[in-house]
Amino acid sequence: MYRVLYRKYRPRVFADVVGQPQVTDTLKNELKSGRIAHAYLFTGSRGTGKTTCSKILAKAVNCLDLKNGDPCGKCDICRGLDNGSIMDVVEIDAASNNGVDDIRMLREEADFTPANTKYRVYIIDEVHMLSIGAFNALLKTLEEPPEHVIFILATTEVHKLPATIMSRCQRFDFHRISPQDISDRLKYVCSEEKIEIDDNASLLIAGIADGAMRDALSLLDQCMGHSGRITEEIVRRTAGLSDKSSLLSITDAFISNDVSGAINIIDELYKNSKDMARLCSELVEHFRAMMLIKTMKQSKEFLVMSENDYEKTKQQSEAVKLSYIIGVIDILQSAYDRMLHGVNRRIEMEMTAVKLCSENKSVDISAIEARISAVESSLSAIRSDPSVLAASQHKAAAPSPPVKRPSSEEMERLRKDAVPMTQWQDVIEDIKKYSRTVAAGFEGSTAYISGRYVLVDSPNDICFELLRKPAQRDKMRDSIKRVTGMEYKLGRYSYPDEPKSEDTLSKFVADLKSAGVSVEEINKK
Image (cartoon, rainbow, N blue to C red):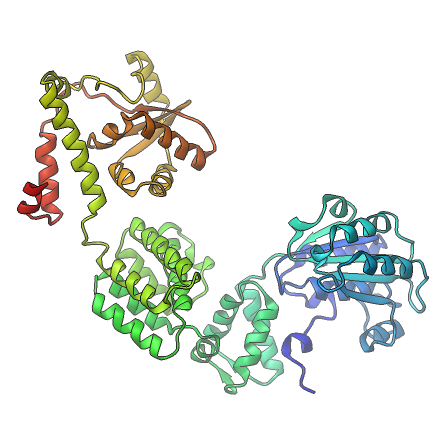
């Protein structure tokens, strides 16, 4: 009977375990020195080697001829455990044996000495699935087990385990395996199977596996059914991925605002049975790569792609601003969430493409309305009280300022100690959750932190008009607290003494014209 690759090439000694030296080295040292714990807890994501190391450890503690901390694989105990003739190592699936009665039966069996080995080993997989009653039944035995019993608990969700259980185990955390380690292992397996595999194909499989060796070997197993030589194209076709050129082309369409080109690519992929949610997810990953290239000097080590694809992605990232890339990721993730909630995926993908292709040229109506509202409020105040105009020209305090203006000495001290607030854009993004219109009013603003103050600065007075409203100030402080976890007072970074050289309303009208708004629309407003 054919054995799948992840079973056929399951490591039999610690030295063969890929990417987990922090676990294997420690276990080998403990075995060599004879310091064997009575309970172990193996945690980590799927496919990282928890069950494999559990089996090796169970064999090593009973091996008659230990070789540098590894089981010899040749003694009667090792062979008996491999062929199943020795029953002193018990594997339990806690997902289907999670009741109190199952654990009580285990406790009764644990009292009996092993028939053939030195230790009776219980491997409890997915231990977080045990019920509260089962955990309580296991607790006493785990705390003071018989000298001939060793427990090995494995779980992917360690946060679900009671603290009383974790405190009685020696814990080992399994990390996601790096793409390069997975790629090297895949090449070794292919050489053993007399199969050729391209470097780009092995790296692509490693990227899809997301740190799980078992997933990588399972996908390799599928690819081997196509051809005696595994290429990147075969991997993409087997995994249902878009061709990299399609992702690059649709990104070019977004950047150049080519709606027709983007829709044609989506239509072609849809006709080839491409899942639109998967396409959306791949685009998110592609723009993530652009973001990392844009912000990091050594970004390549964080990305799994060929040299040619890296250069093309780098060119695309250099053609746009970082804010654009982050905005695209945000829009794509929102579209992906809607796709998972039952909307027509093709229509959603097409709508998103149209939006992204138009994003750079479109006028943000909500921002315009916020600025118009601020100007109209100022005009109303001027009509009702002409003295407001003179006060505004000389930058006197508004009728209800956002915060009490500090003294000149205090202001000088605050400015001297102020540092740029790196999370200011995150605060604005948080404001968007309740009002995109209000958030648009803070476009182009910056902020500084000085002691317990957040000092806001802006090239226009729109954001200060908004902050004069008590309700808006409270919401701003709430947003700052959610982002930073701290409470701050709000202030203005500077209070210019000289009047502006350009009238606010005239500048605003000029901005509207440059944004493409017609004179008729301006007059109508």
